[in-house]
Structure formats: C-alpha cells, structure tokens
Length: 594
Image (cartoon, rainbow, N blue to C red):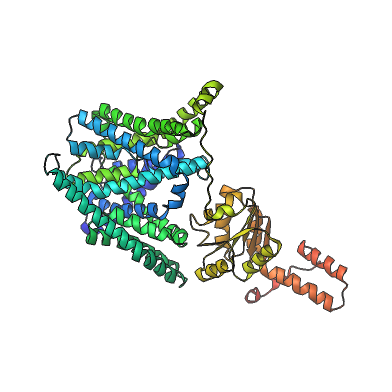
C-alpha cells in the first residue's frame, strides 16, 4: 500500500465494507452497528485479504468520538432529565454501581490487577445509546413516557461515562498502574487538580461559550449559507474539544460534550444537530469499523468461558438489575422488563473506555477483545432478550394476583412539559414561511387553527417568534428537524416552499410516521402536479395555474359575464375540461413555455 493512498484505501475499504455488512445486518433485523463491527473484523489485521491501515482508522475514529460526544451534549436536556429524575437518577446510578462491581469482581477473580479490573468493570456499566434509541424508535416507544425514562436513564449513564473518562487518567496515574504506587494523599491531590481543571473549563464555557457560541452561529445562520453553518458547527465541536485538551488537560470527549451542551441551550440546536448528523454518522461508522479491526475473532473460540461470564455480567448488572430496580421504584412490571431488555447490551462508550484503558497501558488486548466480543454478542442477542421479556410479561399477565402484587404501587404519572407539548393534537405543519406560507399562516391565525411553521431563514424565524408564531428553525429535509413539529399528531401538512425535490423528501419523512396525514403542496409544473397526485397528496396546487384561474375569473366578470356563468367556466377549467381544439402547448414555441 502506498503511503500517499493509504488514507483513501482505508476510507474506501471501511465505508464499502461497512455499507455491505450494515445493509445485510438490517436485512436480518439486526442493528447496522453489528455489520460495522464485522466489517472491521474482515478488513482488520486478524483476517486475510485486504488490510486497512489501523493507525489511520483510529485517528479518523477519534473524530467520530468527538462528534459522538458532541451529539450527546447537543441532545442533553436538563429539563428532560428533571422530569424523570425521581426514577432514572437513583436507578441508573445503582445500575452502574452494580455492573461496575460485578465486572471488577469478575476480573479480580480471574487474577487481573486492580487497575485493569476497575477499567474492565467501567467498560460494562453503560448501554449503547445508538442501540437503545433504535429499539425504542422501531417499537414506537420513543415519544412515550417509558421512552422518556429510557432516554433519561441513558443521559445519566452518559454523564457517568463522561466523568469516568475525565477522572480515569488521573486516578490511574496516581495509582501508578498497579494499585500500589502513590499514596492516598497523592491520589487525592491528583483527583482534586483534575476536578479544578474540569470545573474551570465548564465555568469558562458557561460564562463565555454560552454567549459567544450561539452568537457566532446566529450570525453565520443569517448569511443564509448552509455550508458556512455546517463548517461553523464542526469548527466549534472540534475546536472546543482540542482547546479543552490542550489548555485544561481534559479529554476530547468532555470538551465536545460541553460544546454540545452550550449549543443545546440555544434554539439553533435543532439545525446544528441536523447539520452535524451526517458527519457524525459517517465518522461514527469509522469508529465502529476501527473498533472491529481491533477485535481478535479467536477470542470467541479460545476464551468462551470468559466471554460467557462477561455477557452474564452485562445481563445481570444491566438488564435484570435495571428491571428489578424499576419494579422497586414502583414502575409497571411490563415497562420495567422492556427497559431492562433495552439496556441489556453495551456499545460505543464501552469501546471508548476500553480504548482509553489500552492507551493508558492498563487494559490488555485480551481484555479489550473480551469487551468488543461481548458487545457484539449482546447486540446480536438483544432482539431475543426482548422476545424473552415479552414472553415473561405474557405469562405473568395470566396470574392477576401476582401482577397486582408486583404493581401494587403504580409509578406516578410523569407529565412532560416541553416546548411543543402546548400544541394540541391535530395541529398543522406549515413548511416554508415566504410570501405564500405567510398568507396561509395568517389565515390559520385568523380562524384559530394551531400550526407549527418550519423555516430555514433565521431572520424570518426570529420575526415569526416575535409575533407569537410557533416556529422551528432549520431545513425540513434534514434528519431531526421535522420531529420537533410533532408530525405523528398533526392532521395536515402544508408545503409552501417552491422546491419540488424538497417537497417530495418532506412528504416521505412525514408519511413515514403519519401515513394518514392530509397534504397540500405547491407546484410549478404539470409534471410535478401529476407526480404529487400519484404520491397520494390531497391537493397539489400549481401557482401559475391558480393565478390564471383567478385572472380568467375577474376578466370574465369585467367583460360582462354573469357570476354563475363565470364560476361554471372556472370550475370546468379546474376539472380539466378543454375546448375541442388541438393542445395549445404542443404548438407553443419552447421559449414561451413559462
């Protein structure tokens, strides 16, 4: 492999293999992440044939880690966490403590050093956010109260990982790698210094970054350039991560996480998340592939006992313990088992923790392979775990006395009160608030019909909110933007933007979550109108034609035609009635067809 083409070959091999294996994984109802890990194994040094550059892949994967943690911070909402804190905070903390204890104890029983055992336990105490969110979405639970509890649980786990990533290097450095080096006072001093640096960084970001970053993104957004905004988001996430590591000595992960939290407090977070998502997804795939490249498949054959024990710790400390805690915290039995099943695996943050342990010289390659293999096995078996949970729920439901005993104290109703929940079900989504959209919006306001407007011009959104219009800022075709308009509960979608390609994509996104929604769309050509009608759009209106009908009606009136006769003629034209002459458009010069 030539050095000058190593990067291209690594990217081509990683993306190509990830695409093929990820596609096959989805065909057999497995998360694509499984395919990405297997792709890494196939192009890694442990397999024959094409071998990608592991060092290059790991450097690219670092970008994936930064963007992944940036996305976690971007979607971190203290308000959402506060709504379910009575359940998720004690539950997640106790669950992480149990998994850490079991994993550390298992490693000590194997004869590993205390430092390696602790890091091994840390790798097993957090579930994959990617897998859990995908499971909740596939089962339609993401917007339910149980879904909110699961997301809150993940947030607490993610915060635990962030603190572990910050403190682990300092603690292990003070322990000198074997648990014997360094006095207790040295350990306290190192931890104290690390905490001071972290607090200083967070305070700086809270006082300066909280104002400077949204101010910068707001001015960039007002330029109207999508490319500049995307570059600004990437520059902020990568720049803050690198600056935090260079100046304050904290990890890339914490810097990126705090940068995301700073932006999350601004209404620009929707568009920032949508613009960063494609880059995040691409580099996250490289992260999973590079992780798979480090997995030695021989571990599945040479260490089946240790692998089975590691999987057992994950199931016991994450799945069963979480379900039991939820029942003890007075949550319904069925929802508790489903949450436990969702948490019964490990993923991306375990890979990050394992990689940090290896880089610090604490975790062996055998231990990392065990973590990676356990992640692969638990993710593959996660659908079966859900099937088992549903079977238990069905069996227990046949014993009402037992079910009443388990649910003798139901969980209190948790009422979410986020920004859009004031919008009643059956609202209208209005995409595009230009001259056409503004007129439609004013009509809705006059009759009191609730609607959410989605607009990509920042200045227009600011003006709308000043006037009390509920507005979402961002491109409706980008992932995540339309979700904030709650399409699942909307009764009507009005696409007032002029781009037919954008309109088709918006229709696809909304129809995917609400197949029965009525749709009104704006078009500019007969072909577009026919296409939208074939897509099942309730009404596709062509601007020029509506203008022609209006002008024809008023012309007929001015020429002396009676009102009823003028109405009949316009209705005939709307219905497609034609005079018995040749089609005019067939003989019209091309230059005049406007």
